[in-house]
Image 1 (cartoon, chains in turn green, cyan):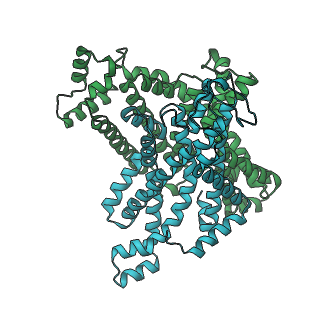
Image 2 (cartoon, chains in turn cyan, red; image 1 turned 135 degrees about the horizontal axis):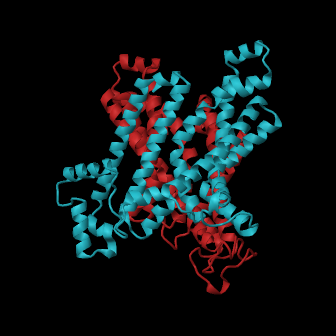
Image 3 (tube, helix red, strand yellow; image 1 turned 90 degrees about the horizontal axis):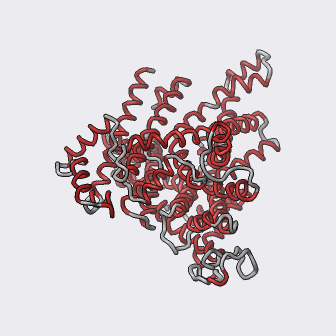
Amino acid sequence: MLLYATRRFGLALLILIVAVTVMFLMIRAVPGDPVQIMLGPRATPELQARLTAELALDQPIWKQLLIFYGNLMQGDLGIDVFSGRSVTEIVFQQLPHTLWLILGSITWSATLGIALGAYAAAHPNTVIDRVTAAISVSFVAAPAFVVALLSLLIFAVNLQWFPAIGAGEGFWGRLNHLVLPAFAIGLSWVGYIARLVRASMLEVMGESHIRTARAFGIHERRVVMVYALRIAILPVVTVIGVGMGFLLSSAVFAEIVFARPGLGKLVIDSITTRNYPIVMGSVLISTGLFVVSTALADLINAWLDPRARTAA
Amino acid sequence: MAKSRSELGQIIHGVARDPLGLMGLIIVGTIVFCAIFAYWIVPFDPVGMNIKSRLQGPSWTHLLGTDQLGRDTFSRVIAGGQVALQVALPAVFGAMAIGLTLGMIAGYGPKWLDNLLMLFFDTIRSFPTVMFALAVVALVGPSLQTVVFVVMATSIPTYGRVARTQTLTLRNSEFILAERSMGASMKRILGVHMLPNIVGVLAVLAAMDIPTVIALEAGLSFLGLGVKPPTPSWGALLKDGYSLIRQTPWLVVGGGLPIILATLGFTFLGESLRDVVDPKLRKQR
């Protein structure tokens, strides 16, 4: 297990290094003077000189990369050219909003999805199973930002059940503001997880330890809920970990539609004001988040199911 | 595709027998038909403004109403389908072709090359798609080509990985070993014997990938970072609809429904295709 964990995190680190290097080179590969591009119309000579020195643009490219990594190790993602504040500080100020949104979305959708999937698998080919399957496909089909817009239209503008903009104040205010965006992001996951759990549940139900449990006269409900479900939800862990990228992507749209603070709103606002250091900082942080969560999902999977350790 | 005509006919027949598959076929067929013949179908010029009749509700003249510039929403929805397919088809087929080539090289080539390509795939996959798209758009500016490029780049790994797995499995199958023992060249083994066995699986994947791509194009256009106005795109419709959401619901409905329909259609079609082409795959999802 320790060996697997070391190897898995080693791979994650390698991927992260390559990804960051690619990002770094991408910025440098853009035709034109990077300082001019980053500063845009705000480029005063002294700002230009400061940024040139900061990015070490007068140095050879490999040295620039080393300096970039040196700063990164110290948690320094550069300075916001507009306000002069540290990019790290700005990004981490917005990050919690996005993380809460993602957590809220995945909590409700995983709970409902697992329940639906387990129920459908325990009663295969009944009406409820068919209905669940049909709903699942339709839910999977709805892109988060379309659901966000339609729910904004129906529940916030027309029915006025929930607030349309902002993140709210206080616990209940925040929760109230979280409902619609979390609904929009989570909806497609309900169907996806339900289908996943149903498939893996049906497979598990045919295994010998379930037959043994039944032979021992254990109550059917206990067999399903405890013995089968425990193994059947394994793929969900991986899918959520790997799905972190999709969740982050959906969060960008949900934040824009509901005018919520967060990483996505920060990136979009920074693109419109051509504030490149913040765009790059946010993309870096979200990539890091994604890589780590994928690795963690693999680790949890390996911990729960020893067979997965040798497969990778 | 190396499928003979009768085989292709069999596949279409199989898909049409499945009720969901038939529905998918009809929806996709309608979208493709509307996209090809868009300029004969649209009742109004999709970019033609008419300030006098702005922000109207649905009527017999304007089936889905008009937007803030008096443009006919129905016409824009139809023309938007054309833009959606213009992005989705080249992006998906490009990604499939590159992914297929790289995946087969990874699966058949030496171990070090395999490792290198897998690292490449994993790296691309490590960027959250939309974040990567935003970074690229921020650097090179929004355009149709940028969207196609981003979508292609981010979906290469999916095809590459599947192609690699298939190649690895096929590599040790008896008919390939037989070919090798008879001294067939690598080009012949990969091109003539392996390719037809991999393309089918990837085609299914591509059908299921198209809605994701359409949604991404619409999403970027919604953010104002995809196709430029006044090009009618479903995402651009949603963008206008969002800013006018308190005045008229019809722009959001007009932009949102085709995206959901297209997603449903391609998903049904893809799942049905998968069951017909390779029933074994069903378990893997």
